Length: 589
Image (tube, rainbow, N blue to C red; front, side, top):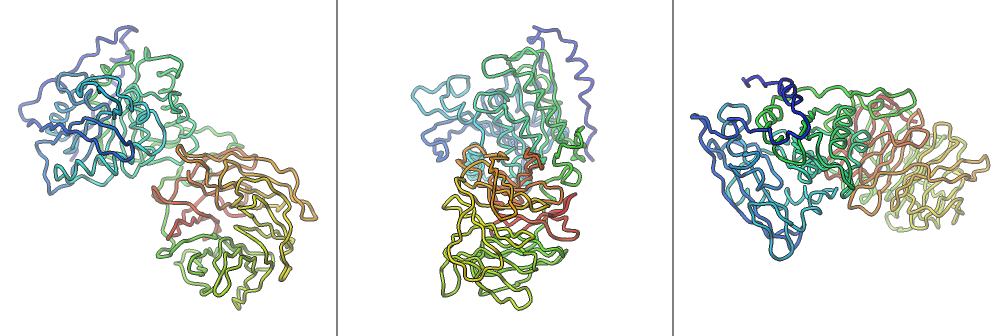
């Protein structure tokens, strides 16, 4: 049975009595300075790592802490520290090895391997390994957003150390933590934010959530991104930095309020200190008790949305969590052309194989059509037939628009001389499809047969891809694959398009040149859902981003999406060789 966790409320009350300017009065307690008699000392071993492909040409020093009770037969927990020299020293401000020894012995944290790594240095004359200094790659690695540093840890450093020391590390992200101070603090958060499958716990001391390399965007991203399975501890001082990059205490408070809004398990301890590790070091034993306490139900999001604000908590039950995705079908080559019908059946293509599959409401996937064309876009028309964009097929590699009879599976050609990607069919029987290469939208009647080279009705779009209709079929939304916009057009009675506007702005992940706005769908309330590199981005009917729903698998894809299933309340997403689904609080258009 785990020992009770000492609450931080009493500690906060003590810290709040410190007056401004008394940062030097934060002192380390005995758990940070003296090993208890029953706490065997772990081993600290230095290392160098100079073989990074992600940060080529860099050299870096580090240390690994191997707890005395490490059992190779049992997966150990892991905690990674940036600016490792500041944490590993047993005469420094934090003294992690001593704290680990004491808390592991008491059973107040798991048996944990500690990795202490310094940032990389490219130039000559690097600073001493055990001291601060101008390591010239630090800001790039630590302040930069995106997944580069997480990949460095996951693909390079941790495999190197695991092999070198024959480690058996837990793969459970709840048993893996990451920590840092200042730029290392935002680095720790970024690594977990990008790869919550690798790190489920974060400690940020005096974190630089300011505009050094764009980190000031995190509070806004947290509010509009599906909650990730992270436990986050923030520490800062009221006398921390306020400079051209931003206000450190304010930015940490904004982080805390955003985490509270989104329903994260989090804690902010705000003292009176300056930009120093003293305060964080003085409360580090209590921080670890809070961090490693037994898993609990995350708190409810602290939202007070107005009726017009379409946050994700109005779409996803209980605010949503990545584990809500269910596998609907697997074993395919490449899935695309997500489509739902009025009965709640979900259809998709295994594009390279020329197959169309069907998933009945609550059922498993079954092959519906084989030996057919390669379908990249699929929709049900008002006549109950399936209209598809094809990329060639058996004996004929020409692209076409085709119609498929649902009873006989007979395929007829609607149009040739086309380069279609995705399409919609209006209730009055008009097809609109995207021509990605030409940057155009093309229109034609669904009743046509053998029509050649229909004319475009709109252009100038940066690689249009996904396309969706409003519930009343009066407006058309079109996503850009290579850009960052979703366009909106009014549909005229004659099939013309008017008022083309860049109506919605897609989130583009750091390090990407484009959003990869791909498949699009709408729900009965007129919200627009667009698959992308960032996930499934949801916009309200006014064009405001309501939130980003996480992709079914970390590092996976979100190619196209549609509503289907029981009550048409399930969102289905094509992800490479698989199809996933999750229940929502809305239903499809």
